[in-house]
Amino acid sequence: MLPGKRLPSLPYGKNEVYGTGKSLSLRFEIMTKFDERDTMFSRLGLIKGTKKYREYYQAHPGLQKEDDRVRESTRATIAKIFSIEPDCMKKRSKWMAFILKIINIFLDITGKKMPMNPDRMLKMGAADKGDDITYLAMAAPAARMANMINKEARSKAISKYKTDNEPAEMSAVIKSLALSYGADIAGIASLNSHHHYSHRGDIFGMGGGYGKQISLSYKYAVVIAAALNKEMVNNAPGAEVQIASMLGYARSTAVTAQLVLYIKSLGYDAQTDNFIEYYSPIAPLAVDAGIGQMGRCNMVVNKQYGNRLKIGAVLTNLPLREDGPVDFGLVEFCLACGKCARNCPAKAISNGVPEMINGILQWPHNETRCMEMWMKNGTGICMASCPFSQGVDPDLLKEMKGNKDIIKKIILADSLDSI
Ligand code: SF4
Ligand code: SF4
Image 1 (cartoon, rainbow, N blue to C red):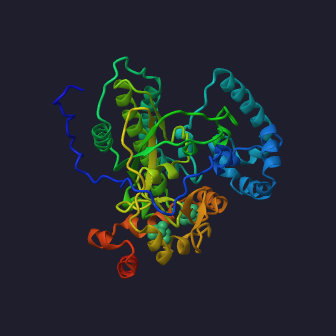
Image 2 (tube, protein in one colour; image 1 turned 135 degrees about the vertical axis):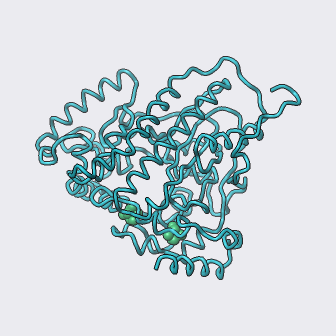
Image 3 (tube, rainbow, N blue to C red; image 1 turned 90 degrees about the vertical axis):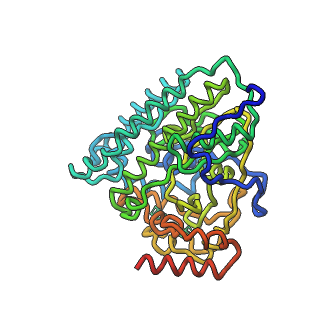
């Protein structure tokens, strides 16, 4: 950059900057990598009788019985994703496995992975009624647009002309640009090897490259979040939440794709890590970028938008300055609150105390029960329940950390609002 020239300030540049640069005392540095094959999405895609199925449950015998039960009870929804009749799912499983095997061989040879298909995802949770499908299709154009720009971002070449900017200034520009592109929150984390998955899973059995080792060498993650529409979330578990979620995924995907296009034009490598293809379990990355803290609900809770967030990231080598995690007092608040656990129809949320799980202080979560409920009856009651999703008085929020009286006041105000 030329001496004496400053990067321009952008319209949203004065928005709140998340991240304090301080580490939480309750974090450990050593974490193990998460394997995408262990995610519920990947496990639900395993088909009985296939090699993948045998190998996975030989390595994880304790999960087989419960996973089989959930696959059976959510068969109708899984069948919708594969676009076949639910009753045929069982009979056709060998045929399906054969087709998927051919696709996987092709993808392995070409080194490609079939990314998430947003149109298929939109069919999830829909009842077999024309009205519901019509309703859910509302988010399809946004998802399609996001998919297109994401493809564009992947294929764009990195500019030969490398810019040279000061990392702190560049970070401010990138975060404010993210907000200008449509994000509600942006933060930056330094990337460590534990942030990305160790091996590829296979979302609902739709992709290729299952079991491939993931090795990335990016230095930073720009993490952004799109807040879901509050009124739509408050209709949980109705179809509106599904639409709000898909719109949130589409927005976070489009923002990260635009940032990748921008960073590549500056002469640095960058790739999206978003709904179309996640390379990391996104919550720990979001915590490290200061987007929020892990709440009892097992989601990232932001002080302004609660847990009604869809999160995406850009992985890059552009020199940046990390924000680091934040601590606005959520752990103490969740200990006193527990509203999401009381309201969860699947009893998937712990009503106990947090534990150190993989280096992060968090509440255990029964993802199997949650997934089953989500696929059969819809999702999002925990998003609507969280007082931070509804908005907490900013003056109280400022004083909340470590202050039991203020915490009680916020909980009381929320319970009066909910009447
Ligand atoms: S999405 Fe529904 S089932 Fe899952 S944890 Fe939240 S409230 Fe419970
Ligand atoms: S509802 Fe209460 S306990 Fe649950 S995440 Fe939100 S603040 Fe924490």
